[in-house]
Length: 145
Length: 145
Length: 78
Length: 78
Image (cartoon, rainbow over all chains, first blue to last red; front, side, top):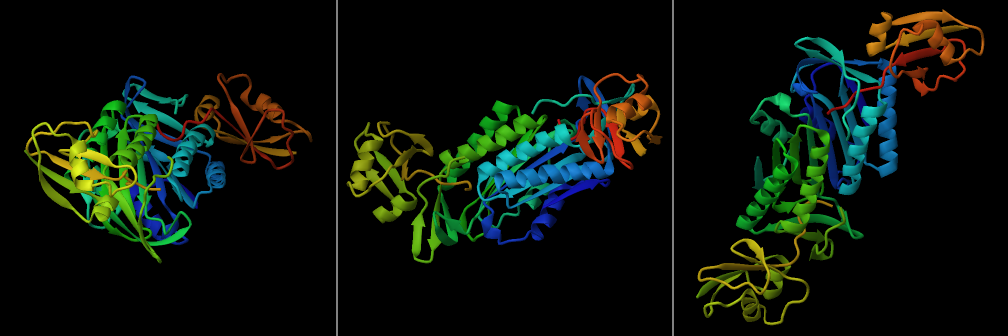
């Protein structure tokens, strides 16, 4: 179980390949792996977006990621989980966040990955500032899940 | 959009890395990627399972994968989708199936990936024969989703 | 008319047969193919496909059709 | 008692301040820190954390606490 606040570019598939090699336990326990990757879009609320700065609150961001992960693992009895969230400067197409869960059965994996994304969006201290042609603006609302 | 019936070992993260490099369209359109990987467990219905043979109906299996994929892409207006399903001999820990969808927003990605897995389990001609200590048996029922 | 018949998975094993060719009168149905091949030797639910599409047993066949019989499918993951 | 105060995102920009130290009487609340620092200059919803945990504005503080104010969070993805 690991959650990471990352300042470098995020390659989700490379992270998953490396993480699975380090997984504890026998591989035959896991029946289901659900992964979600959120990426930066070049369009929001009708405007072209050329860049995004993700601000965070270093210690608290890490604590909150750890906390939602621990709650998901307990609630769905997950085998393992990995969360990696970018901070700093991003450009269209860049992965922002990777959420992965490993479980015995698929229902737990689907539900837990979706729940983690909703918790992450509403509870983890991260703020997006979009760079537009006409200056920049803070994103003030989340889209519904 | 691609669906593949695969007789060789499946490395889902390598497939995803390679497939994304070949993706059409601007990368800034995709906001969400949802992935599900189903793997072979070493335990089912109270028995240790040492191997699994996945039988298929070559042409029809391919058609049915294409069909559920096309329906998912239309229904959720997906940007792209990849399905890879193993056939042949598998061992505990081996990935059996990879389902990936790319969309503008996360709700479509979560819903479509889950729907694809349920359709795949109930409609695509694939049959599992488990190898146990005391011989082998056909799996006759799906687990609920 | 000529009909190719294929069996899969547990059904293939029960019938000890993978595929065969049948000669049937025009307008024969999937059910008639089933009666001539399974001979009451099979228990449990059976699905049918005609030319690789699911059909029900009342479907009429055409010359050259491929008919397949198999148990409920179990792909995907746990 | 000494309290460290931090501001993030749009709030940090509105107040033109990233962090500061305050001296307050024992038992002061988060709300008192807010009144002394934001000075009514801020519009919109504000969240507060004490030692990196969400708290409401009525929470009493201890010497050495770190208090943070920030707008609603917007991490994750579309």
